[in-house]
Length: 114
Length: 115
Image (cartoon, rainbow over all chains, first blue to last red; front, side, top):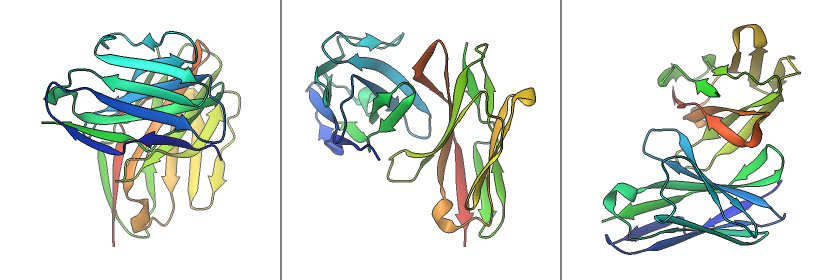
C-alpha cells in the first residue's frame, strides 16, 4: 500500500521559535496533500489543503501566516509553525491523496511548545 | 453541510465480547463515501474500510463487520470477539461529492478492551 512519512515524529521547542514538519509520500506522487490537527482526545480537524506548485487552501479559522505550507514537489509538503506558542501544541497529521478520496495518512508529529 | 456523529465517547468491554461502534452521518449529496479508521495509542491512523453511497451491502472482514443503512444514515462498525489489541480510538469519516478530498471526521469512540 501507499506509504506516507512524517518527520519529525516528536518535537519540543521553546515559545517563539518556528518548527518545520515534513510530509512525504514514499512510493507515489501526490498532487494534493492535507494537514490535520488533533488536540488531545479530540477529532482530526482539517487545517489546509496543499497543492503542488500552488498556494495552499486554508480552512476557515486557520491562520495562513501562522501555519505556512509549502508543497514544492509531488512527494513533499512542509508545514511550518511560525513563532510557536504553547497553544500550538498538538498532534499534526498529514495525508496524501493517491486519487480522489483515497488518502493515506502519515504517522503524525507531536509538537510540544514550552 | 456534512457532519459525522459518533455519540459513544468511550466504551469498555471485556475480551471476547462483541461491540458495536455507532456512526451517524449527514449530507445532502447523493454521492459520498464513508470510512472507518483506527487510531492506536501510537497515533497513526489505520484505514479499515471505505464504502460508497451506492453500495449498501454489509461487509465482513474477519472479526470486523460494517452495517451501512442509508435509511437511518448510519454506518455502524461491529467487532466480534474483541481482543485487547482492538483497544484504540475509532473514527468514522465522510467525504462527499462537493469535494471528495475533504474528509469530515466524527469525534471518535475510544474502545477499551480489558483482559
